View 1 (tube, one colour):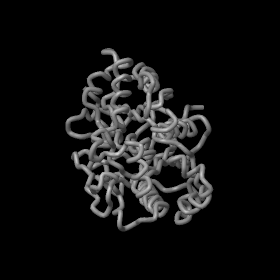
View 2 (cartoon, rainbow, N blue to C red):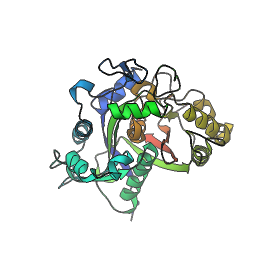
View 3 (spheres, one colour):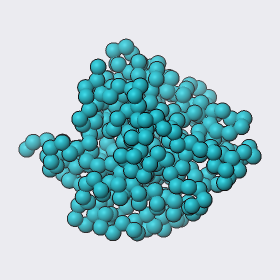
View 4 (cartoon, rainbow, N blue to C red):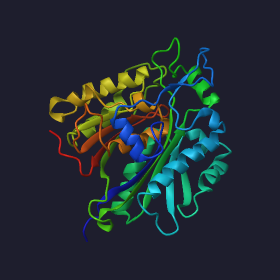
Length: 346
């Protein structure tokens, strides 16, 4: 029996740069930025915070409703590209851990599932950050290849756009504000990715392939490290560097000092001249500087951006390396995504 080849068949996005995969990737490639001063709010420094929002703050103040609207837009975008299976998809959705661990878990699941009869048969909420979301994309590809699944849908959903979450970022010293130039710009996004065997699809209909995902664990507390930060990401980088040379490198550098430090350590330890990564690491794509920090959703947002045109300064070759780190828990992941139809790299 021939081996099944898993393919990415569709991507649905709702991000600060657009309410669809097509709009988000077009504006990303054009170098547009979504960050704006939010004058409807007052930050911890007494000034309006800089945010990257997909939904106007004053239009939706209920946090759970905000998440529902983000996911609904991404699902509608995905369903417009590929038809759901009979009975709908089972969506494996990675969300911030506090949405899964609290008493409202089932209410949140029901709220997210409710409007999507025919598209979804159920939602499996999975706690995690961007590294866990990227790892789940690899598990989805394995489910197609090894477990005979014909229709797999994975997603990632997150938003920092809520007063309590913004205050938490300020207390933790993570948000960009007066007195803290090493802070992130809060964002929000939903991303869903549909996978299936390429043999069951018309020729040329696949967007790309998941070539591999390599994981590591950071043992240092990045908020108060006692030693060198970056060993966990370096392990993932080292395994990826032996895999194949990429044409693009997308990293979740968002302005936080610890991310820059661990990225530098990972590159220094793993990116020898023969790996083809050192040159890319000198000027990687940093989507958070255009879309803000999208939290857990970055784990699928960055692979989605790898499936479309890059910014003009970047090689348009087919293989992209994606590096993401979860702020909580220490998970690190490096993925390799192949874009169908892209011209070979230099």
